[in-house]
Amino acid sequence: MVPIAPPLGRLAPSPSGRLHLGHAHTFVLAWAHVRSRGGRLCLRLEDLDSTRCRPEYVRGVLDDLEWLGLDWDGPVLFQSQRLEALRAAAERLVDSGAAYPCVCTRAELENAQSAPQRGVEEFRYPGTCRHRFESSAARAEARARPHALRFRVPEGAIAFWDGIAGARSFDVSADVGDFVISNRAFVPAYQLAVVVDDAEQGVNEVFRGDDLLSSTPRQIALQRALGLAEPAWFHAPLVLDAAGRRLAKRSDDLSLTELRQAGVDPRAILGWVAASAGMAAGARVSADDLCRGFELRLLSRTPTLLSDLVLAELRAAR
Image: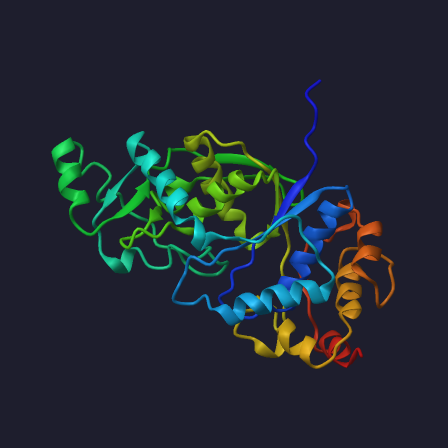
């Protein structure tokens, strides 16, 4: 029998704004899922978007996680410090024929460094450059011009099992086509960076919000092309506001920094997360309390509603 590796998960926030209650919900569940089984957890800051990521947001992320009582193993990994390794992975894909240069317009390449978000329509690349630079001379000409790199997506559906969402299948070729793995400034895109850094850190299970379900088959395709192991997947339903909308980083009134600075008891936030995860843990619990009682099977398969009443109660918890 092949031994089962101990769980190694990760928290991977982007310091492009303040963390909010929706982030807290996902990160606490991810932490408890790993720690409740004696696993290890690494912390990675996905800071490739230099136009939005700022030092004050980095400090805020670390302070917020510590305030909630969440810990991690080993040093914090900054993606921006791994550009050389990420670029090397992109070049390996080009050398193997799994990626190619693309000289299409900037408008078609925007937002490549950010994770796709639910409700945001994605551009489907029509394959303009897929067969445009077949000869070595043509490829050299393309590489001499401003260009991005695109992954050559295999045709057909990519199926996978998710520990929360169950059996899933997406046809990346039909949905978005060949996607960007590096932009014209040679900055690696989100999908590639996540895959390479998960492998570098030894991550064998990914627990995150279900707005990233559609990213999973893209990452599986990249893992296969790079010869990397596929982790176990867990996608938790998001937190929605009173109007049923996804929380956003611009919602500063929901930010953990504001709640922390106002003197809110973080145990009240953990108690809210525990209740949404089907635990009868009480209104105020510690991270260790939540960890001891966590069971994945109890987790709701529907979004958690952050009603005005619940929000008011959390703000008043001192």
